[in-house]
Amino acid sequence: MATGANWNVELREMLMLGGSLALGQVTRVGFAVVSVIMMGWISVQALAAGALVNSVVLLLFLSCSGVLQGISPLLGLELEAGQYSWINRVMLHGVIVAAGLTAFSALILIGLPLLLSLNGQPESVLREARLYVWVLIPGFFPALWLMGLRYLLASVGKVFWLNLIQIVGVMVGIGGNYLLAFGYWGFPALGLMGIGLSTSLVNGLILVVMLLFLKWSPQWAGLAGVGWPRPVEADLLRRILRIGGPIGVVLFVETALFAAAHAMIGYIGVEALAAHAIAMQLFYFVIIVPVGLSQAATARVALAIGRYSKQNLLHSASAATLIAFVFVGIIGGGMFFQAEWLVGLVLGYQRELNPLIIERAVSFTRIAALTQGLSGMVIVLAGIARGYQDTASAMLYVLVGYWGIGLGCAAILAFGFRMEGEGIWWGMTAGFAFSLLSLIGRLFHMNKRIKAQFGDGDVVASRAGGPG
Image (cartoon, rainbow, N blue to C red; front, top):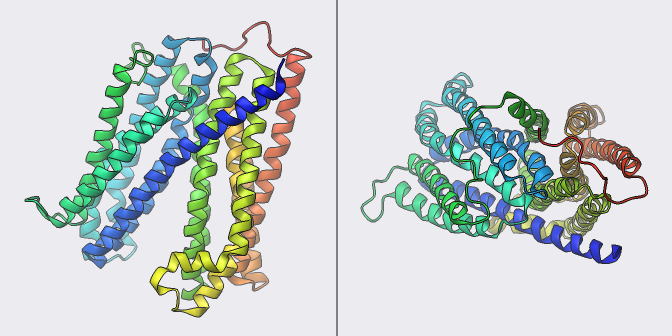
């Protein structure tokens, strides 16, 4: 068997799919950044309200999309066998999960202005937040189900059209923000509410166009999750939630870790807080690629399991690991040796101001060079574990690593050893290191089990544990 050729093919497939998925993530982040910039053009109150609401929306969306990712391994199991009726059942039940998550998130968002009022936010900010929340809610389900379609298309390595439709949609959304927020070409000037309305309309538009594209596709017509399953299978819903629930918890914990670190640095001082914000902007930007690669790893590993091929499985896992290691190594070196230039790039025209902020931001960025490397590897290895349908162990390692080791070390180093902001960054780094080592050990154990199951062969004779 041409092992070298197979390895090269898998490496190329992983690079293409991971890069395409990362491009989709960059598009979403870019739209969010442009929207925040436009909020600042409206008013200080609009920017404050928009930032507060968006932080909660981001936390909810990431957690919900993680839960919905439970459909991805189930799709990969049967795509190779051509079990399209099973895929359709999975996608339809994914719609039920997405609808339930949307309802849960909507309740939280509706109550958000009340929570902000209890936190002492001024009435001018609360008024903007109330209107913004109500126009954002209708766009939550379309955005969430687009992630479901992304998982479907990632499973077969076909995300080009999704990315193209999304890029065009984002461009339309930026124009819609401008027209509805500031009232050009006869449109009313709705301010922050206009940005929220534009966001929801664009999410819905992208979803409709994507569903039409799938409907006209001879291969994927009827598999996009349109309609209601008859009958509703409680066992299938439980399988999606059992796989996806821990993923949602992991994403929630990771987002909450950075929020807790942000709060801790706030006790140190304004300069440290500003410097931390600069370093985090760089961190969030470079981590987009491992997020896309992790989704590709989940899809490719699940597809290899669907083929019941040991060689394909090991090639998929090792290719994702190698690509992640090379990427975070190159990025880490760039962040460490070019920290001053990167900080100046983020500050833009303000780079000559606040030398203390610049100095601390450079220090944080150099630590973040290691932090992003460990975090990126954790994200990708967790994606491989999701392909194995092993999500509970990853959730446990992340919970202990991020909140036990990470925040514990951050507090001790920052305030006990008086390392301040640097101590918080080193603490988070320790948490990522623990989670990474734990995941490596878990994957080694799983690979040994798989090798024992296959023996000396490559493909097992019987298909155990099918869809049911």
